[in-house]
Length: 316
Image 1: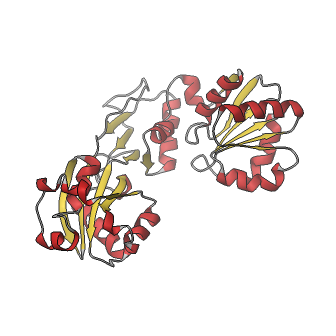
Image 2 (image 1 turned 90 degrees about the vertical axis):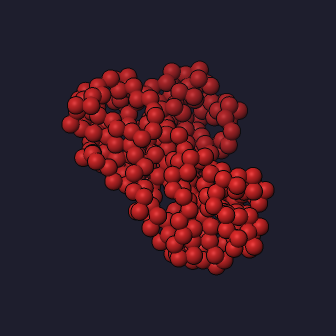
Image 3 (image 1 turned 120 degrees about the horizontal axis):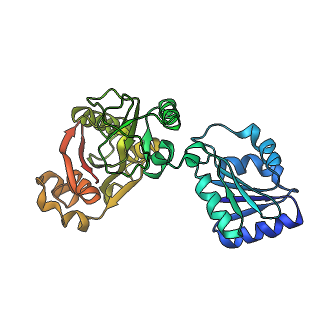
């Protein structure tokens, strides 16, 4: 959602133009923005101030937390000449949004983040673009600072990606590791976790959230996988009301896919069959077919642990 805040009649004309150019735009004027300000900052993904930059800075100052959670904020002067990326330029997406708004209203985009000025994409933006989990935000900032100084770094990655930084060398002492493995052979200065692991789950009726967590932790530790690299969970449709599973997905903020019996039957022949599962559910297997339907490449075959069966597939 986008919040556009204006203070003048000329500013309202620009706000109306922005509303016509984007979806989910909500307009706020000088008469009602103050009473809605906390909600605007916490609930909206993007905020546009059609005002002087100073007004935006003073207004938002009490609410600013950090670059990882703040919304994207841009400022447009009320004549529509300039569009300035003010807050959360990289991770929040303000730089890209600034360019989009400027194009829609025919303004000049102004972006001042250091990496953009130097012509390369910063690591935090790469992490956002590829949906990587950031293991340590402070270490990421330190590596980015090294990049701004033009120092050589080494990037070791389990996934293919395009990084346009010109000073990458295998001989560099600073190493960025992008991996779904919990432990690696490298002493890294920064670890990013690609979310590329899909977990298929089969479980007994009424299994608790704690048992699901314990089973996943057991399987992932045994196979040297990082839980932070989980992209999604998959199971059979009859588990839509399985409270423990739903609580686990909610706590971990993971989407869950429910596959129909027909979808599972279409691939179950590739996996070990269980007459017990077939008699109870109507398919010969759950965990492996669900993992396969999400990712094709099975990297962990079904493993049973205390009433929960886990299988893992990998994307890319």
